[in-house]
Image (cartoon, rainbow, N blue to C red; front, side, top):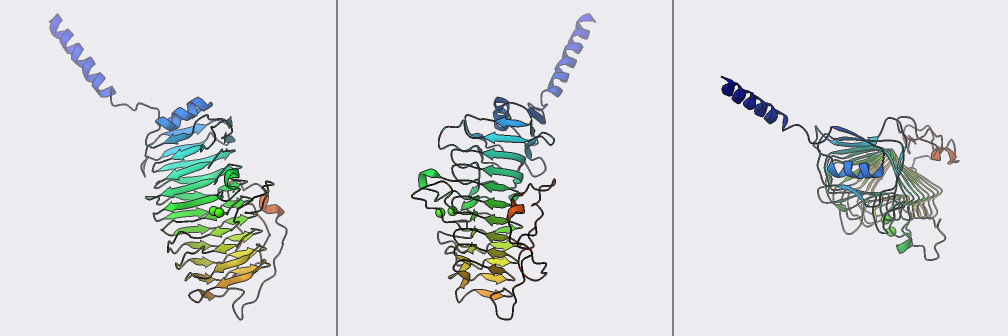
Length: 369
Ligand SMILES: [Ca+2]
Ligand SMILES: [Ca+2]
């Protein structure tokens, strides 16, 4: 009896052990408060992991990166802890480094500032189903935020601030606020973005072959030489909507471009049926809207005070209800003082309230919110 009882006890222990073995190797929620733990948490995340970063400034010495996918029902989350203020600085990274690189699907990243990157701040390569909410990518050495590669689909960039980015090595030629370049994939959305004072363009869709949607976005002050660069080469388009021979019908709704050195909105050689509705171009250096070879659909847009003029449109452009079209009047702006556009965002992350470039019109121009 004694030996039988021992055998039964041993087999019970073994069975319990077998039940416990499949338990998760990592806790579902990880709270990190130093850069070593942050690096490890990102590297070791798996579907469903929630990484909460305590307030403070983090100085990684190597690019933070992951190739691990979440799933649509169990994404990986990287976010600030509660309402704490989290900054990740690239100032301790080797030259040429990015701060954060994902080659992964279904990540949700929110409430983090990425600053002072030696090169691009955030790069998402062939990402599907990622959500970026209330991110800042500022004062870096190339574009602030980049989506790139084939298989770039169904990503949402919401309420991003991207400013002060400048690539010294190429005299400012490349650093955009947001770059969705060299790739393909449908369902990508930029909304609520504020893209300003970057050396090259506010947003650049160079060589991206699937339609991107941009809405509720402000792009301003791009392409000005703010760095004392005697060979400065930034282009300074508010919205660069193509390039490299791609023919693609990008969409821009209810957005504004002002004080950019180049054009407010431009096809950049894209011959596609780009759709631009209810936008405003004000005081840009070149044209408000430059669409000479595309078959763009320009509707209910407002162009005022642009250096080269309101619009260049080729014979394939469809233009209706814009203030340069016959019979359409130009409503007065409530304000042309842009100071409030630099204010902090609302607690929910939306653009700050402003009367700048508002007109009260329900038929033409951006509503500036
Ligand atoms: Ca450029
Ligand atoms: Ca560019």
